[in-house]
Image (tube, rainbow, N blue to C red):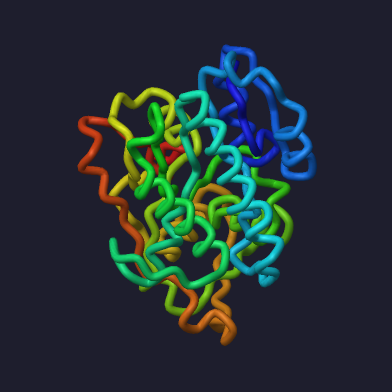
Length: 262
């Protein structure tokens, strides 16, 4: 059986649809109760740890630590004890405004980095563990994410509701490595790499302006420029690009392909 945390989340739901084995779903509200009551660890073939408080604007350090760090460490202790393979959802937010250098800009990113450091220091204790630093994930089923949704989803929603989308001024200078959730699931579940910490993006970043133009073309709407928010100054990544040298010959889906634009 497989333990899947965060199965009700955007990415978790896509994993759930792709799994054929018996799946034990664990959500954050009953996560600690699960650890206390579950007694079939010897029957678990994989821990797919996708659950976390993922808001980059969360300011409650205690809450973030409780769900993102303390629970994870307890779960990993069972993985080590029973030698269960682990696949963990980390985040490219650990890089902050750098390209490939550690520089977390918010508390959420710090919690992910804490776990990555633990993995790095205890790699040899696990049967197998892979931590994937997800870059900017998009895809079907983001409606519930609100402001945390990808620009692909937010721009589409705005145009369908108002006929136009809001784009920050200077968005031609903000580039992101956008990766479709379908590729996330495929790579995480089917790669044959050894234990380690890996970037997971496409290595082909594009600007928010380009994304906006693609959505406007697809939906037949307009683009309205709005001032860049002052509260995001210094906390907004200007460029992200995954190092995908660890995986060869994988064809990632482009945003154009996702939108059926040719």
